[in-house]
Image 1 (cartoon, rainbow, N blue to C red):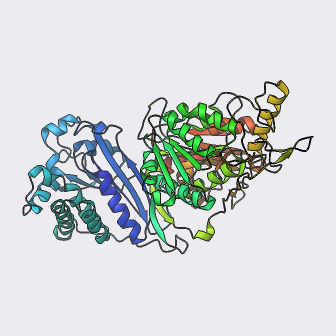
Image 2: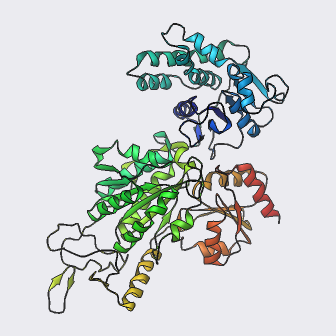
Image 3: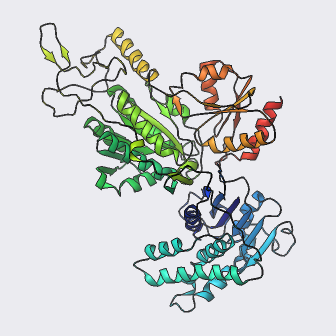
Length: 609
């Protein structure tokens, strides 16, 4: 297994380089996991530490779960990239540096008083000084490009070199470049030439005497057709699949916000699947339009990140009162306020649970991996359509931008989400008159009927003011309000949620309980502990409201429960309050996912206490 990190200025094309290496690695058949990491600024100051952009890829010939704790290889395009990332490297790691950028001014800008390439500070690493810029410009002499234009291709030179080192396929990247620059054939040819020059440099230079073979992960995957997929792309595909399975048009009302915007971008490409996307003027208009689409009979979705959820909270409460299906997808990021737009966090759980006025219960679910975002979108749609309720789906920046192999499901594997709209009267008055009551409920699900506006005879009143049970007429009766509040809560509490599964092969005394994107690091840490002979159990929650019915029974079986979260203990607070369990929190809020090694150390301490 290998962990590679590409790092450079935010204008050096590190995300593109990482994406291409990832795509070729996926096509080769390795298991993989990625971690893009970039500044929030569109263009941070060149050559500075805040302007460093990186892309980390972990790939292997076996099943892996995280982007890796520490890179085996760092490609540093300038001094800032080296200084920002050197602390994460283990001794003996390989460092490929672009020596052309290590000028006195560039080094002073990031605090180097002497060149780290010459002062002995990198003696513990395998250093490969490569004049990437000079070599790239030399390789592109035959093209009619300025030096500045030629220099932009140095990331492709680096990609070619790494592709040679790890025997990555090259045809896909060359096809990609030809397609990407189809309207600029000279630029396409120049990038391909730089890419090939990097490959040839690896093949001929004596500095890289060894190349590495990472075989396909043939035994890690069930049989099927796979593709590389990011969390946001998987969510978009899951929403389309849900709308097709429900035979409903898909409507997305959204306002662009990092890191959720990719879902809007992707869905806007699929009008052929009855997908309509509306880029609203603000967050409130986005969810307002989505709720209107739900009233009109669409599978309605709004996407946002943490600050946007705060703005949408009033309309989510309205959706609770109207009892209409609505998917609210929150791609969590560091907060509060604007916070860390490009960094990850899990700190919106309590906002999702309680961030509305009044008693306004909403189901909450969370995917565990980028590929799992597809299934979680289908599950969110099932709950919303079956129980006529808004549903909160909590992904995060790590899942949204990270990627992994995904097995494309067969159509027959997808759930049937078809909905029966109200077609006629559903209640008979004392005088025998047949009428339509918009709040007459299904006795099993407590869901009210969904009547599409314009259906003859089904005119009805809905709104945000409390309604009378059954009729939907405005009601200020205290007893009716008490009944409606308790009924809406009972509807959420009664949602059919699969039992929680526990992975406990050795009868452990300690349980580690997680939710959302902590699944990969927790599972990797648990594997390390079991390999070392320790006994530990693991369970991971997808459904956070309501909890699985067997969760309380599971928690009672263990002497100790540890809950790692990328917040200050929000799930732990809920678990303690509901089940009176002395859950131990392990928390991190640095904008990055957990490292498996640090989690393993913490869990070992918990076992030994």
